Image 1 (tube, rainbow, N blue to C red):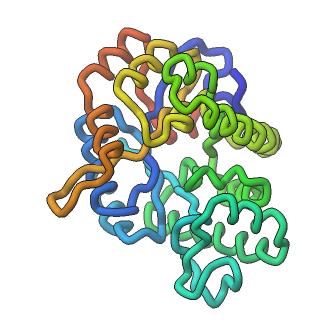
Image 2: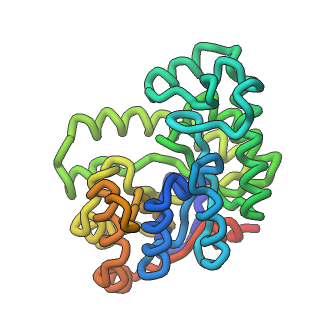
Image 3: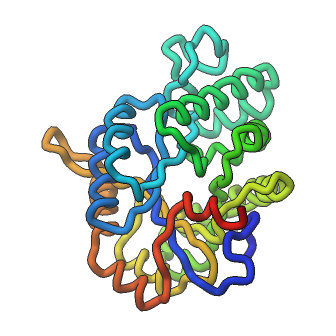
Amino acid sequence: MTEANSANSGDSDKSVIFTADDFGASAEVNAGILQAYRQGVLRGTSLMVAAPARDEAIAAARECPGLDVGLHLVVCQGRSVLPAARLGALVDGSGRFVEKPVEGGMRYFFDRSLRASLADECRAQIELHLELVGYLNHIDGHLNFHVHPVICDILLDLASEYRVPCIRLPREPVFTTLKLARDNAARKLVEALIFRTLSRRTRRKMNQRGIKSTDWLFGLHQSGNLTEHYVLDVIARLPAGVTEIYGHPAASIGRGRPPEAAEREVEILTSPLLPLALEHAGARLTNFAELARIGR
C-alpha cells in the first residue's frame, strides 16, 4: 500500500468507496447521484457549495444517511462563495474563477498576490459546507485542483484546523488502467506523470498531519469514458486495502438530457453485476465516514 496513512495497515481486507463528484452542480447531476445511491453501489459524493442546485442536493442528502457528503473544492470553472469584491483578481466581476485549468494553475503558482484570497475562499468553502451539511469527512477538488502545490498547502493547513480526516489523492495505477483500456494512452501517461508528482508531494504533507486517504484510486484516467466492463475489470483486480472509484454521473429529469457518458455512469453504478463482482472479489462497500473512524 502506498497512500497516505493507509486505512487498513496490516489488514488484507478489500473495501471500495464508489464516489461521485459535482453534487449540486445541476438537478441532473443530483438525480444521477441519488439514483446511484438508492439503487446502486454509490456511497460517497462531494458537494460544490456555490453551485446552483446545492440546496436541492443538501435536502436530498439528509434523506440518504449512508451517502457520505464531502467537499468538492472549486477554484476553477465555477463560482466563489465569497463576494467578488473580497477576492480581487482571483475571480471576475461575477465571482467566477478562471475557466482554463492550465491558465489557472499557472496563475495560482506564480502570482503570489492571489494566495491570501485563495486561502480566504478555501476557508469559506469549508465553513459553508460545515454549516450546510453538518460534518466533513473528506475533501477533493474540481479538476483535482486540490493537489496544486499552492492550494494543497492552504488546504492541508485548513484540514488540520477543521479536523478534516481524509483528502483524495488522485494517483491512479496507470499501467493497470492501460491494460484494461488502451484508448488515449499518451494522454493518460502525461496525466499520470503530473498527478503522480503532485500526489507524492501531497501525500508527504498529509502524513505529517495525520490526514488519511484511500490506498488506491480509479476513475482519473477514464474520466468521461467509464464503461461497465472497465469497472468490473477493476473490481476483479482490486488489491488489499481501500480503493476509491469515482465518476461524474447524471440522469435525465425530463428537461433535456445530460451528457451520454454521465447517463452511462448511472447505469454502471446501478448495474446488478457490480454487487456480484464485489462479492466474488471478496470486497465490501464502505464510505469516508467509516474510513475516518479507523485509527481514531
